[in-house]
Length: 441
Image (cartoon, rainbow, N blue to C red; front, side):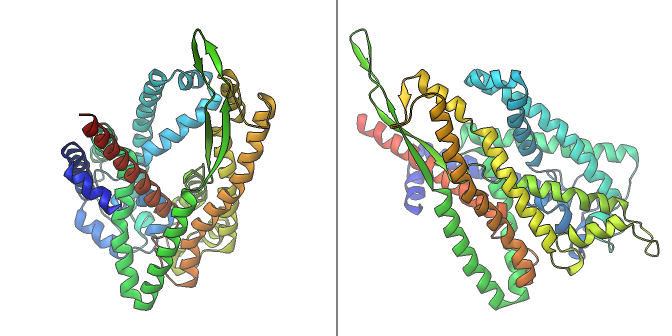
């Protein structure tokens, strides 16, 4: 991998793309530290230091924003609105016939789908910015009871300006990601998520180091083992052989080639973890809004239930086994659900039959679809268990090691490894293309 980067910097065209990508990443990280108008940055920093529940409710969103959400910066929403919009549009292709038609139209249809995703991103950004500003008006719900105010002016014009600024920040992030995809190296949105997650690692590891040096060493060893396992699993494929029959068109012969259908062990990627975390986050958010501000007032029973069974380590408590069981069940369910939505065995079998392809030993048409469905269910089962096990590692580390923020587990490590492998492959492919061009010249 290091040799590939060294060769890339020696290639002028590729070096420009890499430097452009690094420049956009630096601008993105700079924007995460620029506070929104109407926010007292000093008070926010003080509230973050004394926060007791900062990572429990909005931990996933704060992770994908690179810590910008809890700083209430102009990039506070991060890339989450775009991710949510892309997932919604992808799921709607099964429900809305118009989206399904666009999906089959090739590049033109994909361009239209991307435009719909952009519009939905802005709408979701307005909604999420309004929610975050509402939480900022009562910062004890965002940072804990020790924080009383972070906004000197909470009038309607100031709140509207904050919502407009955060929404514009999301639009700017979306544009920056598309610039990287067009003029840089790799997928822009994925790289921005990569940067956001990687930026939280130093702070988390420094907290663990300050807590206990033996625990820090143990965490690093576990992190290395987890990363090795994730690389191995993410590279696993079930290759189904496909043979194309020979056809004579005029005097030319077509077909007769052999290829394969690559089916990943983890076809759903991190989507099940995001879905499960978001759904389990809703009861705790509702409890925070319903919890009385007066300490002497009686807390409703359902709020006590949410705090005890559906919370992620609030006020030093360990995550309850009920939460972990529900979390695991939801991840397994969404792994099967999302895989069934994104991979259609009947559509794949019809396309193979249309172009004269068949799986050796399997008849074309419905038997091929049934065989593909059987295979995909077989490989999704260990993939779902792998996702569930990986997502439980931070919770187990919290209970067993006392580590509040375990960075090397869950969705973060899958994204870091996946985006890293994808980017290195793209650099290597461009290097090979450059070598071939140089040879032909």
